[in-house]
Amino acid sequence: MKLRELIVRFLRSLTSYGACPDKSDYFDKASRNPYEENARNKSAFNGVPSGFMALDRVAMGWQPSDLIIIAARPSMGKTAFALSMTRNITIDYNKPVGYFSLEMSAQQLKMRLLAAESGLNFRNLCNGQLTPDQRKHLETSPLTNAPLFIDDTPALSITEFRSKVEKLTTQHDIQLIVIDYLQLMNLGCHDNKRNREQEIAVILCSLKAVAKEFDLPIIVLSMVSRSCSSANKRPQLSDLDYLKAIDIEQNVDLVIFIHRPEYYGITVDENGMATAGVAELIIAKHRNGAVTDIKLRYLKDLMSFTEIDGTDQLPDGCTATTLV
Image (cartoon, helix red, strand yellow):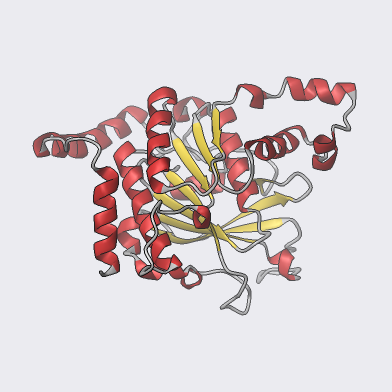
């Protein structure tokens, strides 16, 4: 059986949970609601904000039903970026986020979030070596009331994932889903005729189907192999082998790579600027916008990302009120 047939069959089994709406109703919703909502918003920015000004200007927020891949080689800071973004969304904009961690435990993620938010040494935090003032500071952290829902089920299957998303959207009105990370998910069934790349391709297509079904953006983190196909070590779409097995235009809306030249011993960029503490977001695929590079500050000791100038700003013409 060909891969495309496998994908179609799997998607049919995944989404057959209810009757399909009448076609006229479906067209009516699809054709009228978007511009009405944009008009009410009075801003071109109508997605879930990442909290990073430069990124939000390009992506205009994470859009409903979009599937976004954020990929990087080991040690680039995939989880750190995802947690920094999640912190921004849940605390600064009070938007509920569902975070599926297939590698790290919920407790580990919470400790990393607390360290980044408080500025405390992560090792001391883990060991409990804190002063009374530091403990008091943690107890009053805004993270304690953030609408963040972490699920650390290992080896999560697509069917389990869909069921959990349905529950989260129903009970908590989740606005965004993060999966950390793609290669640890499974189909819930095994087929000797499929290799791992083909399985991941089916998983991606299934994730896109879930994003469309629940009309929310899904961000999935992805590993990139350590091998480099380019001399400057910058990752590119061809480094994601599983993309060759799917129609990327139909199933993936954005592909963003995280790249830190400093990690590879590159001390200055092509413009002669120092690379110390700088991370590049390489937008390699963007269905509805520009393909470009964005620079952020990577704080290694805190395992977090901030704006390059250390401030959190909003896109032009937007306020915190219009984005919530």
